[in-house]
Length: 114
Image (cartoon, rainbow, N blue to C red; front, side, top):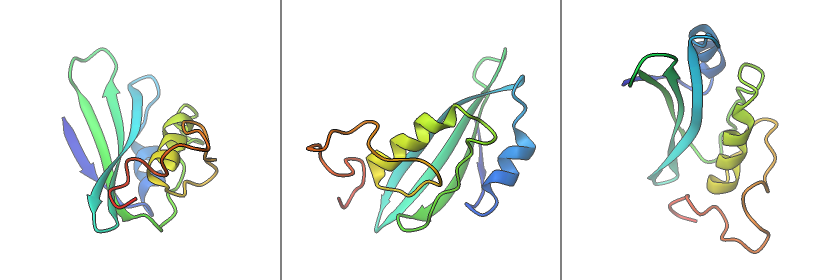
């Protein structure tokens, strides 16, 4: 596994340079609450035809900073982006909330201080 730090400002460029659709499979976008209003966001890829070759791009952020969408590069990322909107209360460009949670669900269940 290789973990590569990026920033939200550089994310689209970094993933755009890296991602070759016939070479890499986009697995997920994930969030890890770090406490204190901070979050680590991860975009996870596996290489086709190679066992256990994983690349994770990650960016450290806070909950108030909008997250750029990678849907223009990887259309299937919309599901993961909508999930982190619901689960963490992040603002992801173009990703609506309300996919995973009912109206009476706990608000932002994966956010540490929610």
